[in-house]
Length: 170
Ligand code: UDP
Ligand code: MG
Image 1: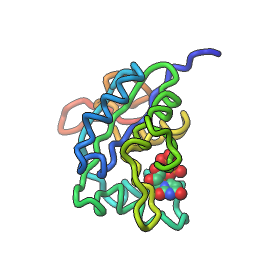
Image 2 (image 1 turned 90 degrees about the horizontal axis):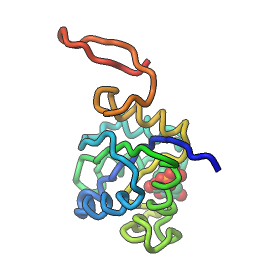
Image 3 (image 1 turned 135 degrees about the horizontal axis):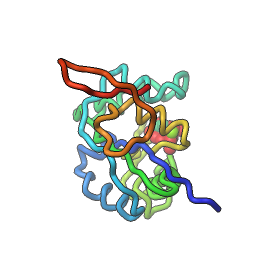
């Protein structure tokens, strides 16, 4: 099988931050030997949350999921966003993350170790990880500006902000 050089978006969701799991999650992800090429802590507006999860609009858990990503269920209105880069990045990160349902996830995975199911049924599963190259591209462009990423992942065009040269996604 041919190696695929890929990038993938990871979000440490508000439950991960409020429960001080950042160090644990980053340690588990470091087992993949992938490189972190972008990282930040950021607030999530309702518009961002809805855009991020737009494929799930219409699902019964959608409204609560939007609240969850914004931190409204945990009174912690931020996420940590990272881009991991390297061979087979998407599959490697999904493997360490574990299945979506924390009770179905391998007990040694991040979601199996630290996730839970809320009484409403929502999966509170600590991290997000892109599941395909197309999804990774859409999500990385949504969460990061080109100048926040230390490698060139997708085409950009020149822009200017207050007289300073910057780039935006082409
Ligand atoms: N989710 C949920 N119940 C479901 C499916 C999804 O609560 O039956 C939540 C869960 O937090 C999940 C997110 O919605 O991480 C996005 O769902 P997706 O199917 O994309 O799973 P993922 O890619 O995160 O494994
Ligand atoms: Mg998904």
